[in-house]
Length: 373
Length: 161
Image (cartoon, rainbow over all chains, first blue to last red; front, side):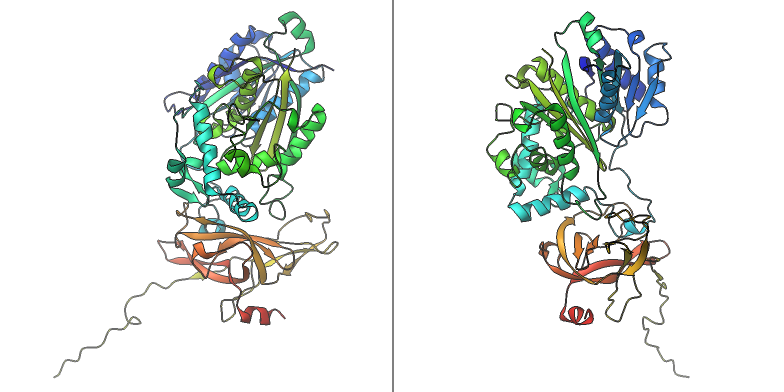
């Protein structure tokens, strides 16, 4: 049995790169992570590749680009929760004593526009039920009805995350937006307007994870410990929990229990703001506040950098970008940067314990990290 | 010889014959008010009802002892949203409301809410199930009989007794 530590990380600048192959984007992140960890590809004992639509054996295609190794490769797909799921699998192998050093990379090169849900002739398409973002729209409208949450409160999440992104060199949209711009942007599906949706993006993020044994030789400085993780799936949201983030609540509860701490112990959070509604309701699902208080938290600026519990100092999916397979790893990398004290002008003061919450279709993976020293 | 001009009626003009296809195993044939019952699935072990059917096990008690069942027409709007643009493959009116309806017999359904201005819906509104046609294929003019929920009328409440 061992602890698991992140000793290196690398993230590419998220954006749209039509002329760059995904293998090249992923390799860039991996090489940055290897250099940051001061190790070579030859020392990596397994490679975990997180992606959603990059095709069969994408991990192997990329591994061959980095160096001649023949190492074990595992491709991990959990929709947009792939990234954190891959880090979880990697850290479990280290903790079980199976390996000393492993690498994780999440990567995606996306088609523009929305994911196609059902074939065009399907009755659900004819009925208009393929409209996105349906589930989070229903969730947002219900939250407004139940708790009086306002359109303005949802919109403020976008304002905050764009503001945070200005200080993030890898962010796709490091430009401020006003609450009026967000609220007046085109309404897609009430209450969600265009500027409240995360973009499609190309990008990659990678981390190197090692054991206690390896850390002794490597040195502890800049190492961040993966304390615990938890993975859940929806218990059939068709018949229950359609309008709640129950999967996140359950994953967070398990991650807290395994870590032996609670939401009050967190200094910094990265959560899955695919839409503003997702972040605001995540405040409640993660136990940062009571049910119905998400609106108050954003109004009172508690989740801005400098507030009581900063959320998405990276800019989140909304402003950092959302390459599906990369996001979960990028969230964990951001927490690691914060815990190392290397976040520059977006640094959260005295960040010692952090949490990353990564959701996908019907699944959620929550990770708790702390400074190892 | 006198020339008479025949009045042209719509019946004499070439009119595309619209076929309205039913979705198999989803609802009962519409009544004269287009009223339908959705057909879902009921667990014989614990009584839980779901829509759509076609499950292999009960989501409440895991039993495989399931049977098709006609659901009640009546329910209430649990949550709703308003789609402002047509998603790809949708050729009906825009904007349109989508609701998550909790039926009185325990099943829940996600589909369009019809019969009033999309922006006039509220959580808690009482509704009843109806069939309504939406275009399926613009080239050959076929339509699909879709299921939706409209504001519950007095006739709906009587029929359910």
